[in-house]
Length: 290
Length: 267
Image (cartoon, rainbow over all chains, first blue to last red; front, side, top):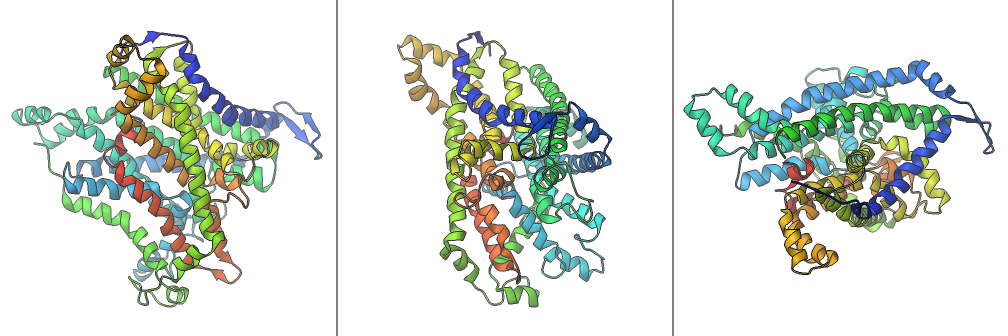
């Protein structure tokens, strides 16, 4: 749509600006403030410059957490995106079953994060949980609280359970927007199932899939509550992702300076990657002429 | 040519989704002795004792009330400020509009863990700590950008000629917005409200950090089932089941728009 130039539109945006300034800019400035100062208590602060940043960049702790986080997000995306597309292709297109499937699939998305953790905490327990019990009966030595691999596997299955529906719902919406005529044309050309997917369905889903990947990346990169409830970051540090480590540092140990420097770098990484996604998304949108 | 979905693939996926939830429901209907002593696929001695515990104890059920209060507050605030802004973004070009739009989105990307401590200090210093308003405002951090995005997507779909015709007919901006424009994007407003509700409802880190007693959300209350005498599994499961119900209720009303909402109105 052709938009008119009107700088008075700023007044319409003003309420949002004031609100977000209060709820985002002010707190962020506090973080910046802490990241360049040190204290001996009693609210006496003195300037340390970029010392905390240098400290954090040299600490194994942050790099290890970042490594675990990147691995986790990569695995999540690698499983959820293809699986989501696959599920979307198999969803009923209309009628009662379509509504039924939509509502059922969306259900995990609306469960509070800590309850998601609780559900899997119970489900995976060998003594009272179905999953743990069945695995134990099958002779698998499974214990997510003591074994790092089991903890990771449980977390990944939990996240797939929690969020794959989001990718599937988005992909489904993309599929629904494909006119029937495209499929008929493909039929006349005797296109194979794969060709239909590759040249009709996938291009049409491109826009929504980018949004799905962006959302999944952002949210998996900030994951806190679910692993906190399920494993508490353990065993050892095996599932201590960035947010968990940050909260431990800031609220648990009250190391404000390092935590603030950590926060800013953490935010920056997310921002950078998301900006790349966003730019690609806008380019795709423009190319589609929306 | 459009291949029909494979019902068994769908069925397998839905079973995978439902099993853990069923297990929670199953446990919520058992007594603690039954949970720890025997293993069964369904409750042998059906009991509603766990639910009774929650629904008769104010320190339990007030958690739900608190959560609902700040969620509704947050939804109202988010939509109130997002509606005019989304209109501006969808209709006009103005200085810095693209940068502003991306900057709003960056707030959706901000990890709540980064903001937990500064929020705690900010709201304590202005005397809002442990109020519903504090949590509602804190959740605006990610809900306002989301609402702006979703509404902007929906508003784009309304032809601009409608605005122009209304002005020619002598409507003021306010009258046009309330009487003509809002009804046209009613479904968009519904979806945006749903998403604000949802993300505020599921969030724990900020709501737990900003409250202690008076505005304590149910999600934080649930952690107290861990006591010296061991876990109270039955009550924990019942509390979990009760947190799923509000979501399940509202989702029915927006089922056809869920995907459009998640795509930020861009399908």
